[in-house]
Structure formats: C-alpha cells, structure tokens
Amino acid sequence: MMDMHFDSFLDYLRYERGYSTHTVEAYGRDLLQFALYINVYTENKSFDPRLIDSDQIRNWLVSLLKGQIAASSVNRKLSTLRSYFRYLLKQNAVDKNPLLLVSGPKKKTVLPSFLRDRDISQLLDSDDFKDDFEGIRDRLLLELLYETGIRRAELVGIRESDVNISAMQLKVTGKRNKQRLIPFGKRLKEMLTTYLEVKQKAVTNDSGRFFVRQNGEPLSPSMVYYIVKKRLYAIPTISKRSPHVLRHTFATNMLNDGAKLNSVKELLGHSSLASTSVYTHITFEELKKVYNAHPRTKK
Image (cartoon, rainbow, N blue to C red):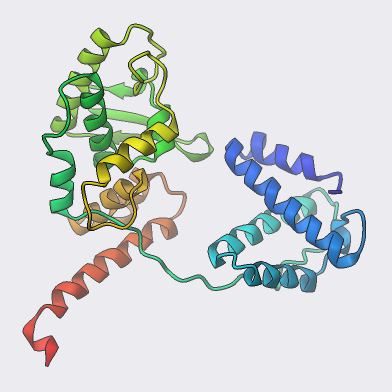
C-alpha cells in the first residue's frame, strides 16, 4: 500500500501545479511501480517513505534498465520520485531527501525527425486534397501545425474565439494551462477564412471548437494523429509520422532561417531553453553535412 500522502501529492500536481490528467496519471503509475518494488525489496506490506534510502532507489533504477526500460523513461520515473520527495519535505512528512546523491542513466541524444523543404512542398501543395469540408479542413490542419509549431493537444483545444483573423493571431492553451499568442501570415489567414466559410455551411451543430467533424463533434487527438500520419505516408524518406514531426520541422526551419533561440522557445511554449536547444543540434548537423560535401574534406 502507498503512504497517506500519495493522493494528496497527486491532488497537489493536479490543482496547484495545473498538471494535465494524463501527466498526473503517469506520476501515479511511476510511484505505484516504485512502491511495489520497495514492498518486495524490503518484504514489507506497506510503503513508508521515511525508510527509503538512496541504495534502494539506485537498485530500482538498475532493475528498470535490466528490464529493457529506456534511459529516457527511467529518468522520467526518477523525476517523479524527486518531485514526490520534495513535496514530502515541504509537508514535513520526511526529514531527508534520499535522492540528493542519486543520478539517472545517461540517455542517448536522439535528434527530432523533421521534414525538408521539398517534403513540405509535397505534403502541403499536393493536389490530393478534395475541395469538400474535410479536404479543406485537413489541409488547414497540416498547414497550421507546420506554420505555428503548436502541439496536437493545443490544436484540438482551439476554439473559434481563439482565432483572431483580422489581427492574424492565434491563442493556444499549452501545458499547465499556460496561454500564448502566436502570429500567422497572410497565407494562413486566407486558409482560415476559407475554412470558416465552408464550416458555416457544412456543419450545423456548432460546438464552439475550431476543428470539428462534419457532424459538429470536435476532432479527437487520435483523429488528428490519423490525419497527419496518413498524409505523411506520401513521404517515404522519413521514419516517424506524427503531428510532432511538423512541430519539429517548424522549430528547425525557424532556427535555420535566423530566428533567435529565445523567440522560438516562446512560440513553442517551452518552459526552458533546454527543451528548445535540441533544435540547434539539428541545424549544426545540417551545417556539417553541407561542409562534408566540400571536395577538400574528402582528402
């Protein structure tokens, strides 16, 4: 069994920190997994955080790695424990933090997948889109993901009131309910205007959401994933096909075209520059490829 602070910690994440239901559930699973390990490790039927030491935590991390759990996932679980014990310290439920001298495994840096210019043209300028409601919606959906870099969940949450056509601004609600304004250009303005006109005629049941199905129901995250994945199959050169690929492409192209790192951070809705800086590695790898194409580098 978990200790008495388990539920209060999850409530703290949900209501005070504003974490999403998905994130809170992930924290809960991580803590439950750790508690079950400790119960077996110590042969105790109850979980007491006051008795946890750094060796027990390290042994748990080793067991996860032996179970073929990726280093990134192990580090995420370790982050959950860090947050939990910081909370317990604030509540005076423990008098020490057993994670102070615990470090996670080093993870291999995997550069985000992104589309090249020719791939973007093939994706967005294709003649395969129909002129009906769904065709116009799907083309706009892809264009919006690429031109603004918003997340799938952010796109699904957009309401008609969030789209300011005249000011050419889009209001999105990101992680932890943080809102930000994203500007867009004339091309997207025209596409948004066209979509709203077609939507008004084709959709009778108005839910207030911007992206909807023909029956008026809001598009689900899984439906957005399906639409993007289906379209990305037309590009055989990429290995990953998801809405996040368009977000990666947005960030990479912005930096390649001279945008400041901090500006891209704000547009993406990142909480720190560390999350955004991964895209600088992509631009550096691109520069190396260009340089390695020089004939003198081969001698």
